[in-house]
Image (cartoon, rainbow, N blue to C red):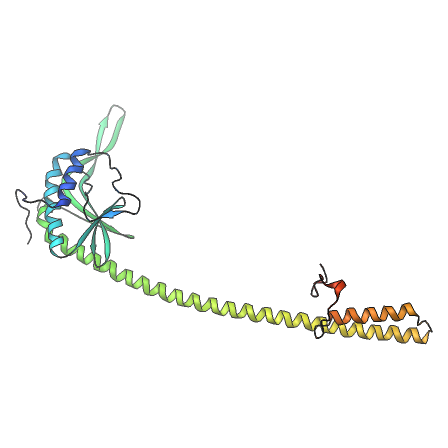
Length: 265
């Protein structure tokens, strides 16, 4: 069982930083780091009355030394204070518990938060939060070993859940990539089919046009209306049909900018 010394000796740099921060300003929490910057030495933010700070500082010092002795590291940034266990950055907050008290005022009754003297450690990671508090029978000072074990269990559970999520995400990624490949293949084949369908429709149109020209020619011969202008027209029309025919697509300088599919410029 880990015990809290009556008077800490050789306090950890984190403990010193926490003490300096608290005495420098107990209310305002300034940004110490640049954006995305972090350090393995920093100050814990203690939320509580000044009368409980020395108790909290002893707990923090013992807590930090115990975790470092087990090979764990700490991280401090503008986002908070963390201990790294199982690769999980667990946010730590030491605070004094408050209780809601109903008091009488000149305007009636209202509720205020009153410090209880009971210290607690609150931890957070992702969507999970836990808090362990001292009691009258067992103050937080006597729960260091318990806190370490519970924190390790908490981190292990978060790691297992993180591993589970990563497997789910990997499965989703594989499924999404598979669906994407299917959609891409489908879209490509659909475009090819649309192109075949369009060319087929153009081919049938050219056949109808050819039959129509043949009928015009036969009609002109029967009615003795074949003229130079008529023959020039037939020649011109045959050239345009050859330009439109998907199996020929003869070059036509006059229709160079015309889209064969939509017949527009």
